Figure 1 (cartoon, rainbow, N blue to C red):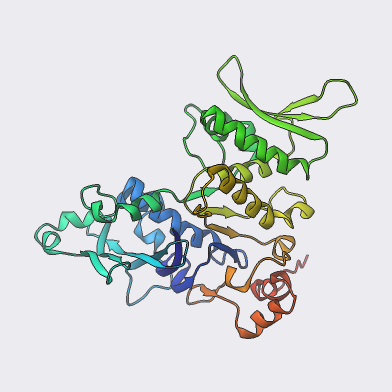
Figure 2 (figure 1 turned 120 degrees about the vertical axis):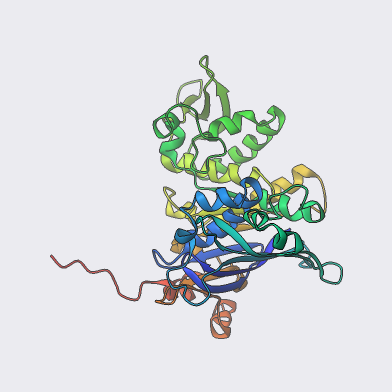
Length: 387
């Protein structure tokens, strides 16, 4: 499945915003326009399904921190999505509307789940009679409760499979410096990244490393092999082998590898790791511009490798939702108009924009997204320094 529609109301930067999403989406916009907050709407649904509404809101600073500053008459916060199958057929609609109770904790104001496959069956519609008898029930969503989500468990599992990865090379090299004591699990910034790689089944790990290594050989000079080893202290290390003038090849561990090499490895591993929507924030960071220009195709090639490994004709590629500023990445001629959303900030909240007919025509005539759409997302006023 994938998210084919999203609707946001009073969510951070967005007072009212809706958009259709393809399997691959590129989000562009000025700094502080809401690209990260747009991605966070998907992470929020994951956190609600995984940890519950209370924790999901608390980790974001509370209801008032989540609510759009432009909210006025209708202060409730709404996050709604439509889920579709690989064939484009709509399957589910989930929508959550919440605000805060008298204790400033999050409270469900409306929650609905609709099965779109069979006559738009209303699976969940809250508040219901139980909620009206006991308002404490509205502090939890049906999504987070095993007993309540039984009829739409597929939706809950889908949200839990959402993955946000923003691997930072310095964090991968020195995880203890960024997380004294116990290393945080499933950390998107890489504190447990090498441990996750090591914990993967050995046969699978070797297969993924071999394919990633083959892809990296074309962009990293003299690279011949990748492996992950455990040292005598129980710490895993990424080891890269390079051709050398000596008889034996040279080895480098993660602390010796460049930021770009570690960043690329993390991005590529993230494509293999999981099956739900993958959220990538500015994948161009630390990566050479020539390689950035090939990232979109590289991600597609990796997913094709996954399909071959699974040996199934009905393998459904993961949905990729990518925020970026990179001209090189958006010059890829393979990026279509339906794959681009740009965020336009305003005093009444940011808006989600898609290419109009004229822009679509320009793209069909051979211009790239970098030529046609990226200039639309530039700041209204150019940066000037007056000393």
